Length: 384
Image 1 (cartoon, rainbow, N blue to C red):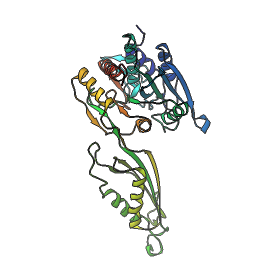
Image 2: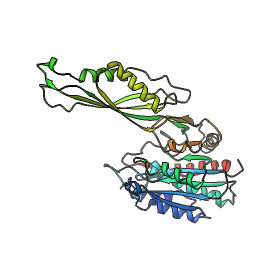
Image 3: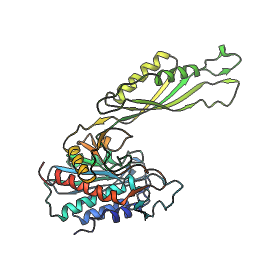
Image 4: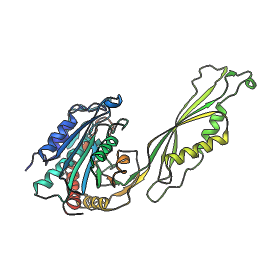
């Protein structure tokens, strides 16, 4: 029997590493040590310094050299702990049936369940019909520039192929087994600058006030429905996040006004098509403006198939629940992985992620390990 069939010790080890992005604090090395003891070949990839950024620690580990290659993916980096903790955020305290600590739910607990599921799979003497791999990054909670996206580029350069991928993000709102993510909405950030001519409020005819145009533009953007949703996606949404004039004087018409917004969009749109729509809308108001667009991820959908079917069956067996196949929530690194292979997400309960006293039920660690184990049996335990 291996020393990693119980997910709790490794989860506590990982939570004990203060790996707030971009810091690693030894989390990747600790995980690599566990995987190496199970027979994985581990490649430690430190990326970012070549681009003048703080280095990000990443890990690609593989067991086996044949296809299909089934990959568990996730991240060891965490958000800052903040204030208000009952238990120290990096002490990995076990109390009242819970494991407390930053990253317990998002998502060091799930990574420990990955490893425990593989350990049990190997302890049974099962010969994988293919390979098992882990792609773990330290840059999911950050900008995502030197994490999963660059590891995937490296894999392509090495001729490595991923055939199916399961991301261990905390997909369940309240209880384990509620929800699988089979896609994600895209995310577009827009920054709008409307220009005019500064002047005295008593002589508005000598100025060009940009604020009425800014207001008209924002009314137009927020008052127009983007779509009615699709079979797997809710309607796309546009939310204003900032309106800023920066004018403290009561007798001055400002020279410019700024606004920012975010669009979460479904698979009826792309970032490019939305930018074109935005510019058409703004052009109807007219005047001088600048629009800067940043796409942090395109929408994607992995239609129900072998991996989601295996997950649903495993979740029913271990929890008695039939999970929803959802595309709700924010973005994840699955937005990069979907370019390499079909990808699905399932992990722990996310109710306390990014909060003080982030925690996961000990019973859920065991159930999730069993669910992952059933998926391994179905997807890798026999030829697929």
